[in-house]
Length: 261
Image 1 (cartoon, rainbow, N blue to C red):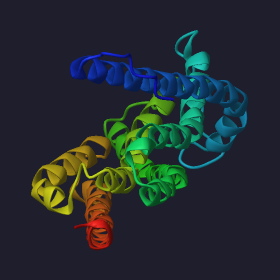
Image 2: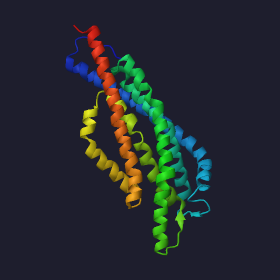
Image 3: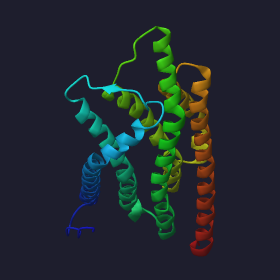
């Protein structure tokens, strides 16, 4: 709610008041997100056991013994599961809070259009989670174990090392799958345009290929299996941004024809 203006306040003072109001609103919504994150981690701790048992029954770890090399390993494993489960809960809520923060600056039609993006935040994260777990992680795991066997090393894996290796692949790639939603949202806010995204294409390709190389084994096939989908995801984002931008231009033109002088 906007505070009443102080009588006789200067323009600079009013701008400062408005800035403090926006910062207060942002802080309030950020606190809500942190509260949901904490609640999500508590829920995640209860769900860690079934999630752990499911993953341990799947390839490539099925039948393999994991060890604890520290007294904190078991607790650390629980916290990693809790964090991932909390992300599933908090991401759509954080997207809704972001929408609520920028809502006053949007037209009524834009408010409805951007609200549709919120459930897709969860959908894209889950798609990214599935892609990284079923495609990228097995490639990385199989490559590292082949290297260990080639060197005649005895494979003894710690539970924290295994799940840290897994989640260090799953979380970044899953978050990258939010790229189309983020770009469409920023286009709707008129921060990004398709033209600007095309100019950024080389830099975006470099970053995505770099990520693909970092999270996968150092061979061309594995790198391509990750980098190519990420590049396609960027191009889909540019295409979706173009669709949003064209609709914006059409809406602006219709508004000018109806209300313009």
